[in-house]
Image (cartoon, rainbow, N blue to C red):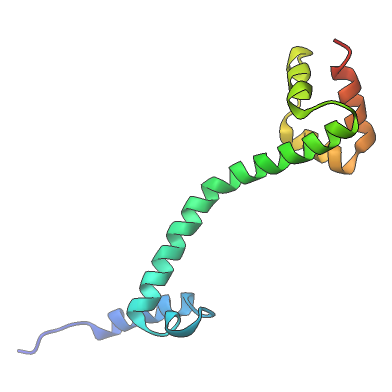
Length: 116
């Protein structure tokens, strides 16, 4: 009796992955083993970078706050220390948004923090 291999299922599995690798360069898009390795590595990068993204955004917020704070004549670290001391509950994301989009509101926060 011949061996049953269910070629339909294995071909469909390969076709599905090759569809995911469309747009890749060279053999990465159409050679099964290369495409599979490339796609798996891409998934690893995606997982890792979803975690790193949070740190990148925090760094961006800090840069924006620091730039706006220095226009007001105070450094980032001093400003954050004064905000904590005054018990002003505002996070870096919102503070960075204020610094970029609403400079008057940011100045008001800085002024309030410096009333120590």
